[in-house]
Image (tube, rainbow, N blue to C red; front, side, top):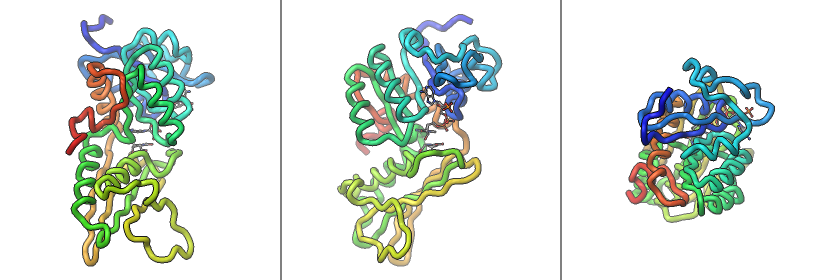
Length: 276
Ligand SMILES: NC(=O)C1=CN([C@@H]2O[C@H](COP(=O)(O)OP(=O)(O)OC[C@H]3O[C@@H](n4cnc5c(N)ncnc54)[C@H](OP(=O)(O)O)[C@@H]3O)[C@@H](O)[C@H]2O)C=CC1
Ligand SMILES: O=C(O)C1=N[C@H](C(=O)O)C[C@H](O)C1
C-alpha cells in the first residue's frame, strides 16, 4: 500500500488494548494519517500478529512488536493509552526521537507529571484525562458554573461510572472536571477535594469538591458534575457511547501538535478552548 504525501505516520502503543484497537480502526478511517507501528509489552500474546487483524479490520501489514526504538525512529507521532510506567518510558523515547506524544493514560501522579514535563523539552506532548470534544466543552461549562454559583450556597460533587476493568479512581476525567470546578472557584483541588466518605463523616465541609466512583459492566465512561444548592440542583453530564470519540480526539491532537514547538499541551489547547 502506498502512503499519501504529507500523511502523518503514527504509532499505537498498547495496540492490543481496548483503546489501542479503537485507535488502529480510527487511524484507518481518517485522511492525513497512517499507522507505521504497533507496540505491545514484552510477553504479550499480540506480539507477531497483524495490527489490522487484531483490530478487526483485516490485514494492514503492520506487525505488533515490543521493539519500540526502531519504530519510534520512523514515525512522527505516538498515541499512548497504556499505563503510567509504560507511558514514562514512551515519553523518553518520544523525546529522543523529537516526535509528538499524545497521552491518554490516566492514574499518573505528580512525580510522573514532572518526568513528562522534562520530556516535553524535546517532545510535543498533548495529555488529557479525556480526549473527547464533549468532555472538554463540559469542563469549560463546569468552570463557568462553579464561578457563577457561590461556594457558600452551592456544593460541588463529581460522579463517575466506568466498566469493571478500570484500574484507577477517580477517573482522569473526574479529576479534570474537578480541576475545572476548582479553577472556577479559584481554589486548589488538592487542598479541597474529598475522595472518600465512610462511617460517621460529620456534615459536609463548605467549599469542598467531592468525588464518587462507580464501577461495573461495560460502561465506557459517564461523568456528572452536580452543583447542589438549597432547594435546587444543577447537573452537567457527559456519556461516552463509543471509544472512537477518544480515538478521534487523539488523532486530532497529533495532527495539531505536528505544527507546534516542543512543549506540554492539553486538549483545551488543541480545541482552542483554553481561555474560555
Ligand atoms: N484520555 C482519554 O480520553 C482516555 C483514557 N483512557 C485511559 O487509557 C488507558 C488504557 O485504557 P484501556 O485501553 O481501557 O486499557 P487496556 O488495559 O485495554 O489497554 C492498555 C494496553 O496497554 C498495554 N501495555 C501495558 N504496558 C505496556 C508496555 N510497557 N508496552 C506496551 N503496551 C503496554 C496493555 O497490555 P497488557 O494488558 O498485556 O498489560 C494493554 O494492551 C487507561 O489509563 C485509561 O484510563 C481510556 C479511554 C479514554
Ligand atoms: O479507563 C477508561 O475506560 C476511561 N478512562 C478515562 C478516564 O479515566 O477518565 C477516560 C474515559 O472516561 C474512559
